[in-house]
Image (tube, rainbow, N blue to C red; front, side, top):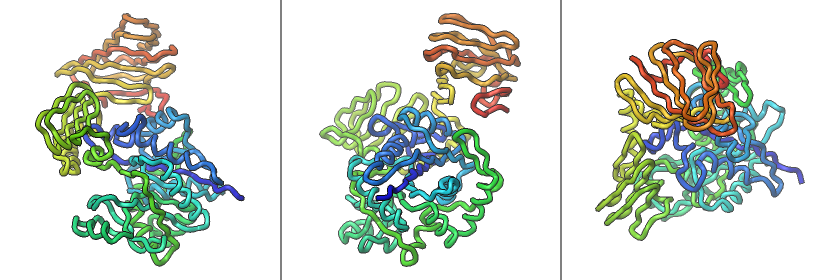
Length: 475
């Protein structure tokens, strides 16, 4: 029996605004641990690798994301012992149809025509065996030339999802998000499924369908792909060309036009699926006490019902609450009714209009070399705790508006200041004058931690002039 070659495609470009303040644009929900011990992105990658066997070979994943998150992708895959076949970096968001087109073009460039298994990076399932069985059926259909889509068997009248109407295993109709009465009717009638946004088809089948239904998207993506640049695992389509690509979802561009025209089949999925699109969904999948309360972190709940309390950095206590969500991070606290948790995106939009940093970044910010945590700040000073991974280094840089003191807490620091190179051990320190070229490197085999004290008239992260950088960020 000929083996079926599968190429997982993980779409990891979302911003997860409805899960603020835990999800930020600089560290969105797909990279967070919201259920289990791994991030949603890692769960998606692991589930798809589980397809291997039973006549199916699974290649390393193709990941479609953006420039800002490229090192998060590599780090989280590395933690699982995986390496991507490529990370396709969209210059700007253009919705899911162009994202899948980039993945199809990448898959076809070696002359192969694998079966693409396309999934968002921000979903969870509780029954992986059932998920794998359903997906293997879909892969078999796709290998024969069909388009296969997974339809989630509904267990409640949900108004937040689109629906699929299926007849005899084929998709008869895609339906927009219904009102409650219509959703209740769908549940009672049967034959209706939630659209999970997961679909399976050969790369050539996607390109042929896109050429048929949206030739403008196909042509614009091909133009951007023709001038792509490759840097190790990273593939960057042409920025100007990609800006001309129409923004459209997979469903609107292709899938909704397929019933009755192309062979599009639906595989039922009953695997405890959830897209964790809002805090209400997180509460639904979380373990609960006898009163329906779910807690994460250092939380104490008394005389409360059906409430979610998520504590990140300190004790959070709740008394006399019902149907609420309380989420605490070091720099922000959210209190919302569960039924209105979808509207958290309105808070994020207001933060963006006011250009507040809480919209984009946590107090603790991950970087490819490690992380920094802004533990104190004032009008002319800021204190950071900085961790540098073994063998990693920050860029060779300078600042126009601030000076810095560095104190080593643990590990060994190699410090470049102008033309001098110093080695500092624990409890030793150095001073970086304003305007001086400098670099911090960890030459050791254990993480380096320092305390950085900044002083000056302007302390923003954009006051950095990079001269050399291991990660391609030189100014």
